[in-house]
Amino acid sequence: MPVAVVVGMQWGDEGKGKIIDLLSEEADVIARYAGGHNAGHTIVFDGNQHILHLIPSGIFHPGKLCIIGNGVVIDPAALIHEMDLLKKANIDLDGRLIISDRANIILPYHGTFDKGRENSNNFEKIGTTGRGIGPSYADKIARSGIRTCDYRNERYLKKKLESNYQEKNSIFRDLYGKELPPCESIFEDLMDYQETILKYIGDTHVLLRNEIEQNKKVLCEGAQGTMLDVDHGTYPFVTSSNSTSGGASTGLGIPPTQIDRVVGVIKAYTTRVGEGPFPTELHDEDGERLRDEGREFGSTTGRPRRCGWFDAVVARYAIRLNGIDAMAITKLDVLDRFNTLRVCTGYKYKGKVYEEMPADLDILENGEPVYTQFEGWNQSTVKAEKFDQLPDNAKQYIDGLQNILGIGFLMISTGPERNQTIRQGALF
Ligand code: GDP
Ligand code: IMO
Ligand code: MG
Image 1: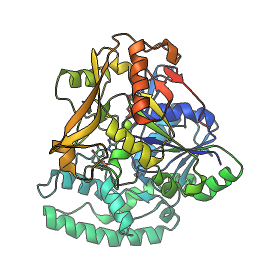
Image 2: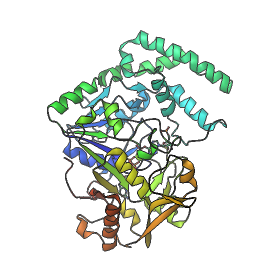
Image 3: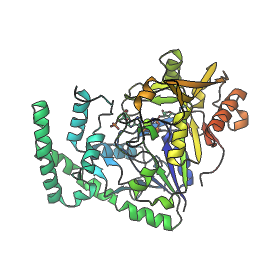
């Protein structure tokens, strides 16, 4: 049963796109299981950069099947825009891209409510991407969502939209004293995408089951990261889906008993976009340097990412929660010009040191990180093809992390390009 999950171990943007693109070589099927176009997965090869938001990161490997699972929320306009960009880049999608007919759709008013809530004084600002992700998942859980399969029955879709619209418009009127755009125009816009959606949807659970039965290798692509998971992350400063490995099972319909490998992707330091606690965040020159050298600006919204030291409490939590048995570390090269590096191993709060991730945000916000120091290497790691070719202090940093975390690195990434990667084992 060769099924592997690739999951982000921090607050997203760990470099999952690059790692999944590389691992896709070893898979037959790449299947995205959660989130929506809040994600931004960057893939760089032959000097060209591609940013994917919904379409799996295996799409640049000809002949590989790419699936968007039922756990993903889909904005049809964003999806079709992304498909058009790929077609322009001569990437063949027909017969290779299959979208679950059970995936929920993001409607224009989901984005309106997302932004409205962010700008209101009633709610704590989360710093969402404003893509309507939360309100769309809320409708899914409330059982009023519209799904891709509803495109097969225009009358049913219209009726569902009308009843939703009545409710949403009266809330909108109450809150903002304004009307949403007319229901008819929302319906007409939705119908513009009907032909394309119908062409690409299918029963992806059955498809995946058949592939697995034929011993095909399946790579489940996570979006966001462990600390953004709605159940296990820094709630409420999280996204609205289960980005942890368990989400692969529910978000694709693959039974947990069939998942036999979980690879965690982690940056050599930590970043986060949006609001919420971040114990190792730096507000000094080192933080600026991480942002500059690491080009830490969001792939989806362009916002500057907050930067800080590697947090081993987060990493250990991610390993246990996701069942990670191998890791890929990215952006080691960003640390090439630091004299000293720090790794957080606990949070000191009111005289007690916490080594397990606490639910209480006050500990994360006001706790003092306990650091272990490593010496920097002041040398480029970019051209290293093997672990042995890394500078001694870089090897010590990597070994030190492996010791603290108790598992090894399958890959060490030293640049955005495919060939800037040290491989230390196979996926399956
Ligand atoms: P994702 O959301 O986890 O796929 O990550 P993003 O694509 O949002 O952000 C990762 C960024 O780091 C992208 O711009 C990548 O091209 C870049 N990147 C990935 N690995 C490396 C690396 O090892 N070194 C450097 N310098 N950049 C990298
Ligand atoms: P990838 O897959 C980093 C963050 C947002 C915000 C919070 C909630 O590229 O790693 P949402 O729009 O989901 O309701 O926003 O989650 N967020 C991400 N941060 N990488 C992502 O995806 C993210 N997707 C959502 O910045 O803090
Ligand atoms: Mg990203």
